[in-house]
Length: 203
Image (cartoon, rainbow, N blue to C red; front, side):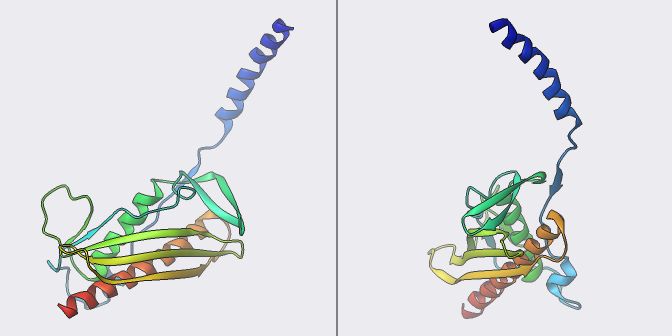
C-alpha cells in the first residue's frame, strides 16, 4: 500500500508542476494619481513651497491589504481574483496616490509620505482610516473612510470627515473595477485638499 501511494505521488508531482507551468502570470494593477493639469486646473500656478504636509500610511482592513484584488459578492461574502493582483501593497498604493494628488491639488511640492527620511518641520499631518474599498455586489466601487487633518505640533484636528464615495464600474473585468476605485480615491483626495486649504485659511 505504501509503495502504491509513493508511486501515485511520483506521478502527481510532475503533473501538478506541468499544470502550474502552463498558468499565465497574473495581471498586475496599480492606482494612479490625478494628472497634474487635472489636479491644479488650467492656468493654475506651479507648485510652491506651501505648508508642509505629512501623509501617514493609510489604515487598510486586512482582508483588503493582500496581493489579490478583492470584490464583494454579498453583504458578508468576498471573492478573491486569481488572475489579477495589485502591483504593490494596497496600503502603500493608497498612501502614495493621496500624497501625490495633494501635491497637485494644493498645489505644493511640500507634501511627504511619513515616516520622513529626513528632518522636516511639518504644519499638518493627514491620517486616513479606510473601512472598505472594493466593488460591491451592486457593481459599484465603494470607498468608506475617515480622514483627518491634524496640527502637526498639537495634534488637534483642524479638518476631517467620515465619507463615502460611490463610483459606478463602467465596463467589464477587473481593469474597469480598478478605474472606478481610482475615481473614488481621487474624490477623497479632493476633499482632503479642501480641508487643508480651510485649515490654512483659519491660521
